[in-house]
Each structure stands twice: as C-alpha cells, then as structure tokens.
Image (cartoon, rainbow, N blue to C red; front, side, top):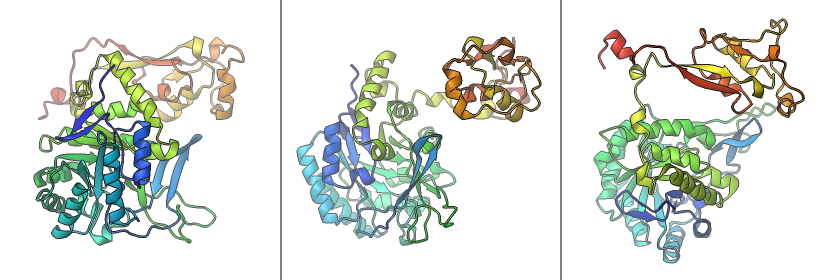
Length: 440
C-alpha cells in the first residue's frame, strides 16, 4: 500500500498529511491526543496568545438542500485559556506522541519582544513548528492582529522577520483570503523568511438574518458581528487561492491546504494543486475525529489504483493544466447526449436549457409553453421507475445549437442519463491569442 508519511516545510514529520486545523477541535491537549488516537497525522493548536473572553453564541451556518452546515460561520476568537496551560499541554502531547506533528498557532500584539517571547516558549514546550495566524478576519483587527497583519504585506514581512530571528523550527504563515491578491501577501511572507504557508483562513461573512427579530446570526444579545466562513462551501475559493500561490514563481513555498476538506477526494484535489499537507476543521466539528479513518483508507486506495507510492508522486500534477482563458482551445467542442433508457421524464434539463442557457433541448410531446419544473419531491418516485418514460417525452438535443455549456448535465438528477461528449470539429487547436494575434 502507498506510504502517506510526510516531511513538510523542511522538517515537520508526520505519519500522514491529514492535520487538524487551528480551531475548536484543537483547543486542548485531551482533544489533540484523542485525534491522534483516531489517526490524524498532525494538529495545529488553537491559536495561542493573551487569553481573551469569548461571547455566546458563536456559530451559525448555511444549510442547503437537506445538508446541514454546508457553510459554517464563527465569531469565536483565539484561546480563552492561559498561555501556560496551553504550553504545558503541548509538552505533554509531544511526550506521548513524538511521531505526530504539533504546530503552535500564534497571535500576539505587534511588538518584536512579545513575538520573541511566545516563539521561544512554544518551541521550548516541544512544538514541531509555528503557524503565525495572520488570517483571522474577526475580533482582533482593531488590536493590530490577525487579518490586520495579513492584509498589509509590509506588516507580514516585518513580523515574519521578527519570528525568524529566534525561531528554531519551521515557520508557516497562515494567509487571509480577504485581500485583493493573496499572492502579494504570500510573497511578503517569503521575503520575511517563512518556511511554508497555510491557506486559506476563513472568509468574512454574515450567514443569515432572523426575519422575525431582524438580527443577523449568531445572535449575541440582540446583535451580531461578521465572522469567518468555512466548510464545504468555501472549497472552490480555497482551491483557486492555493493554485494562485502555488503557481507564483515569486512564492515557491510549501503549502498546507485548508478550506472545505471533508474527505479524501478534497484532500487529493488540494495535493494535486501543490499542497504538501491538508488541514481540516469544520468536518471534524461536524462528524468527529474518526472521519480521518475514511480519509486515510480512501486516499491510499485511490493512490494504489493510480500507481502512486507517495504523496510526492502526484503533488502538483494539476498545476500545469490551469491556464489563462485566452490560452484555451476555441475549437474544442462537446455536446450533450441524453440516454433515453435512463430518463425519468423530469424535464429539468429542458427547463434549464430554455430558461437559463441556449435553448437547444426540445421535448416533442404536447404544448410546452406552460411547462413547469417537476417538483423536487416527485423526483424520488420518478427515479424508482413508475413506468418507462414515453419516447415522445424524452428530451432531445439539437447538437447544431448545443454549445456544450454543461448545464443540463449538472441539473440532471440521474447519474449517467446525460453525458457530455466531444465531437470532431475538423479544425486544429486555436486559442484566442492565436486567433487575434494578441500578445500573450
């Protein structure tokens, strides 16, 4: 079976690339040890700094189509436990689990001596590495911490340099996505001497408003505040920003990927975009530590099927496949094909195409002018096969008009009923740059 053992950022060793991200699941030593027993390869301790007082309540979520916590919003701040307590527990965890990675996440006021002090104490406690929290988007900005640092490249460089003056272990900088160009801050971390990056931290958000009280969630005595958004909903944004960093020749640092990782598939996606480890928080909060068992088994099985022996064998393989739009092949063409033997007659593809796309799908039976979408509640009974869909009710595609947008395939509730298939245009590959003669 493949070997998942990992050496990250020049010296952080762990049995697998699955780390718990800094947050509620890594709040204390007992939690981290339970996580290691479950199989996690590493843990980034809940951010240590001068203890603060948290509020109640702290979390809110976006649910979608029956799925709870598709996106999670939190207004919880850093540790509310004394620094001494956290460091003592880090030392105990490292004593019991010497082969697992324990990373100290740090956030203190912007003073050189304060950073020197917390770095030395964290490493003396046995931390394998440091993660500078320059990404927390809520609660600390007015104190010159969190994203207030990560949104100003000069501050990022300055504090990273301060830390590197005394640090003996690898140093990671955790980046905020709440910037115009994350590459600028990544470059600043590189200039400061960072050994690696963690990306991304949470996204500024308000998840919803109570329409009876008019108070945004979470409600804290009739008021609320913007928080950090995470969970499955942020994965596409996280993948984009990770790719931006990984493809930038001026950065060139190892990346620990964060953002919506719920299983081995998401982990593989982040590694394919160049990450050396992945961090998980929301999924562990939702389902518990034992989700890592499926992550490990799933990733090993997939790697074995693909012929990969180590993480390095597929790390970054997707990066060359991402380019600017102007370089894409204008003569590549796909069209939708509807397979009548699997069609349940819901006509979702027809409605989507006519109301939201390019009007190339047709249904020949009867007057279609007043058609409405089949209620979602009826789809299950249609899937169960209450009778075959009459041929005249099976949608057909006018391939001459089909632009291959994928919308019908995306809305179809039956796996394999619609496929997107390439057709030969008889034209050579040609990009927009080549066609117009524009400079690349």
